[in-house]
Amino acid sequence: MKKIILILLMALFTLSSCQNNEQNKDLLTLALASEKPAIKRVMDSVDQYEVQIRYTRINRIGDSISFEDHDFQVDDDNYFYPASTVKFPVAVMALERLNETDTLAMNTRYYVEGDSLESTFAQDVSQIFAVSDNLANNRLIEFLGQDAINQGLEAKGLFPVRVSHRLGYHTDELSTKPLIIYLNDSTTTPTAPSLNSAPHPLKLNSISKGNGYYENEVLIEEPFDFNLKNYYPISTQHQLLKRIIFPEKFAPNERFSISENQRNFLLEAMHTLPRKVGYDAKNYYDGYCKFFMYGDTKENIPTHIKIYNKVGFAYGTLTDCAYIKDEKNNIDFMITATILVNKDGIFNDNVYEYDTVGIPFLAELGRELHRLEIERKD
Image (cartoon, rainbow, N blue to C red):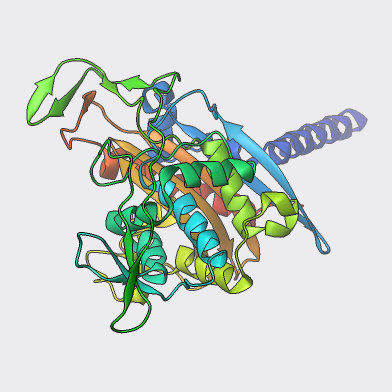
């Protein structure tokens, strides 16, 4: 009888130890070990997909907040093309410039010299986050200039980073175009253009990718070189997100000089869904720019879940940098991840596995982390 009791106690101790070990694992490790096909397919061939992930567990004790970062293959020296994720820092720097310019405000009307399309800075920021509009981003680059963007970010301790070109098309033009600012309904004034520094070639791992690319509809059978393009690694993206969501956790010189009204507007723009600002819900469904949790569905995102984020997708690379808040279950966390899905190794052929591999992976990863956050014991 005593022997049976001893065996039972040992079994219970072993089970308890296994459960404790499982709970002690960080949630990112548990999520990536999932048997869900969308995750397992990528993790079984992870080197092929150049995956990098940073997850932040947010711990609260009373009014105190602390961050617990967990990484998977994050390395600033391993290059990935950031695509539209660079629009996030451009939008923030534009708001800071407005805050420092007495004659301009978020709702100031303007157009770029040589272009008849009128806009406001508020509209640009909204379009950047709602549908990742390239032209809105490019207008803000004309407003700021690449040098001012890069120097401003570095002054806040946000580096490495480099914004070297506009989006939607690549140009070597280093001069910005003047903005024509409306002082009233009939009077305008131009801003001064800026001349920016020429980008130096990046010396990073994997800066040349694949085995070919199309240029002017001709296949060039050599790796595609990214060395003059934008550079915005996972670590810098995640740090910017933290500064915007939790500015009080940073020293004054690391925060952005934006007003509380501007910050509230930015946060609203970051989580607002396209249908809420007038875009066609069929073409711009809720998950269109929300890869984590909802990127692989066209169903509406529940109202109790807010995703403050910026995605990027181009050249077969998908990236999302997000703060996810579930008001119903009282949980929140941060996740930034990138994945390359270019099976044939050819760039500019528009043959990428976005919908079959990349977005399903990011969506399932978001759901797994959300589930694990709900089940957290501490």
